[in-house]
Image 1 (cartoon, rainbow, N blue to C red):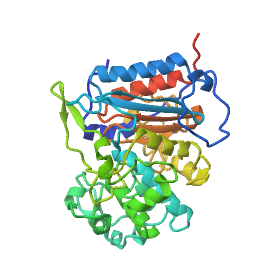
Image 2 (cartoon, rainbow, N blue to C red):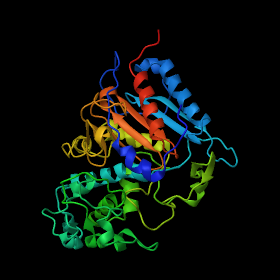
Image 3 (cartoon, rainbow, N blue to C red):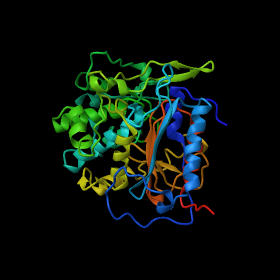
Image 4 (tube, helix red, strand yellow):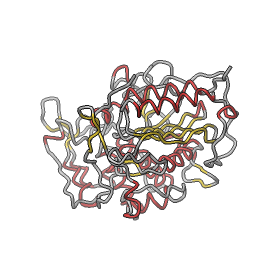
Amino acid sequence: MISRTMGRREFFMAAGCLAGSACVGPSRPGQLSSSLFDWKLHAPAQLGMSPSGVEEIRSLMRRFVDTNVHTGNIVAIARSNKLVMYEAQGVRNVETGAPMRTDDIFRMMSSTKVVTAVAVMMIAEEGRISIDDPVRRFIPSFKNIKVAGPDGNLVAPDREVTIKHLLTHTSGLNLESAAARLQPIERATSDTLDTFIPRYGEAVLDFQPGSKWAYSGLPAFDVLLYIVQKVSGVPANAFVRERILEPLGMSDTFFQVPTAKAERVLPLYAREKDEWRPQQPVFSGSSAYISGAGGLFSTAHDYMQFEQMLYNRGELNGRRVLRSASVDAIARNHVGDLYASSFGPYTVGMGFGLGVKVAVEPNVNTFVSQGRGSFGWSGAYGTETWVDPENDLSVVYFVQQPSILALVEFQKVVCQAVGATDA
């Protein structure tokens, strides 16, 4: 039984390290024939999932609440564009005991990064950028960027930092490393993307671009969203809303949460000394600084719409927001074995795409159960989503108290329900 939660920083690093072993079942529905998706629940057996297996998922989520792993959770699962499960467990407010609601708004943290990656690919499709472009083309100060040498001295990069380096966490740009502390860059509360991002030209990179994989928690994807804003000529907030959120019907997703919807944002808690205690969140939902790395707030409903678009290779309900080739590029390993070798057994068999981890070689790691080609990412407070084309799955797992052990167990029961039949 799982009884502990992980700290935010611990989860932030560990969640992206989990590798994938394939779901294996005796049967699967036919190939995708339509991008149509609605919120009507379908019987699991109609979609090649075990009814008892889906009940086991439900029971597991209840147990997580009962054993104080999470205060509450929401799960949405779709197979072959059909909804199999969509429900909430637990409470949204510890003090009042108010139950978790499926329309509750979560702090997405790094789950924001996949949305930013889609925005980048949109302007790439328009020919305004190439992901192989050097960042200095859009942010001239990057011509001055330095790399921490082996002796602590600063040296010039042996290649330019590119948009692709930022998307794949191979740029060396990090705010929390020893190299970054050589020339710290502090963001003021009054800063915006326009006033702050050019200062990254003063940064010190951890390593030569493209030589390693190391998670860039905030800088890389904030830089990427700034480039989207600068190249498109549209404020980042408006670009994401008009080009992604509105076409996908994501009406409860925001960088800046409207006052009328603020009460739906979940209070943040962590388990301390056998009780739930309120926590101070990283992003307020009202800042002028629009973070492409972690600033979004969203619902399980909205993010499933986004995941279904990715499952359908760029299209949802007759509206295409991204070319199929762009989704394929997002979901393809771009880093060789740099990610697979970055965290020992946790990442073996994995690659990294454009803002997402990718299951390259399933069945070689026991920490996560997903099919070959699965791709997705997570947020520091516990949001986890993935698309599994091999098994025709889209999964949204929303909590606000991260637990790696709980996530591993959840993915296993999802896997076991796929293709299984009840005797």
